[in-house]
Image (cartoon, rainbow, N blue to C red):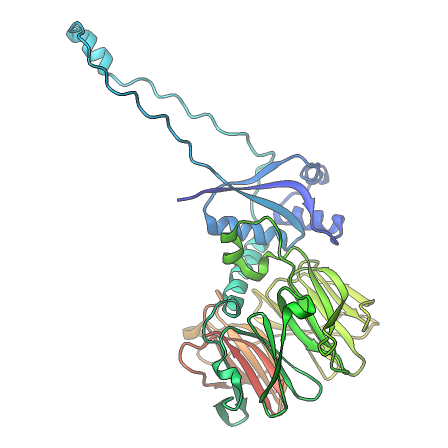
Length: 431
């Protein structure tokens, strides 16, 4: 089995605050002495972890990248032993019995010399393990759009469910992100293209992502004028193919927020250097709310990308951010609660409440962690996940967050996102 070392040379992701990154690094590894922390950022190469299997190396890579640290994974090449000399036939004198016994006795085995020691004895904190598990769950929840597998969009009306049979979406492969424009016209990502639909759900035309210079999208929303806002992923160059395939979106070196006019095939950058994040647009004033787990920041941006307000928050990806009737609602990896925050610039991000959600049958299903949320027809729709993110269900709650009922889904369904389309709820399901 291949083994890997995780190396570090003090590199910090572009756009990150070095002081904040070092603070998070110290917290991850239980380092209290500032001088010891600084010693990691001198540029000297340090092996943080040795002899890791592939999956563990990838998860450590992601957990550290989420706090702004750039590490490098190096495969340990096996030592090739020189071939044994061929036997030589020769006449020799027969040794005496004592001499034979001495020659047959095994030589004293030399003690293996250890490699260069780490500078410090590092231990991963519980928070780092949660981040690594969050990265694993994120890979599980988001890998389906990158595979040519059947991903069905289900349109749920209040009293039941029916397939969205009038659209080409039902037969498309590799469906991913979904957003609905101000005219109630859905836009759906399918592989490297955007599929645009009319109000009835009929496909109208397609826009290749390459036409708007977008490599990979992580999130969609719209401004009030119909411009599409895209959270774009920028892949890291020079990483091994197996790592890209294993981790998908979590490999991003620095995501950016784009404003795109689809008819003009033009995009402009609103913000860059964004880590794992979620966002939405308040179309009343075209303000953007952004929760960035990489920077542990909640931000409010104007339509040009200027920061209007900012609040430090400890965030874990994957996370989901919603806005309803002037209030922010946040869910994140490892939390069984919905955090309710103030969106006003005065006391921006102030926590107003935190509500733990519980559903019937959670002891059997393990669905105790809320993911995406949506409020419609006086009910909260919520995706509830198991701890590892491998199973999930769709549940309804009252406005006061009391459990109402479960929405039946097809067998083996794994709902990952909710989008409101007129009086329906679109459920992105990675079957």
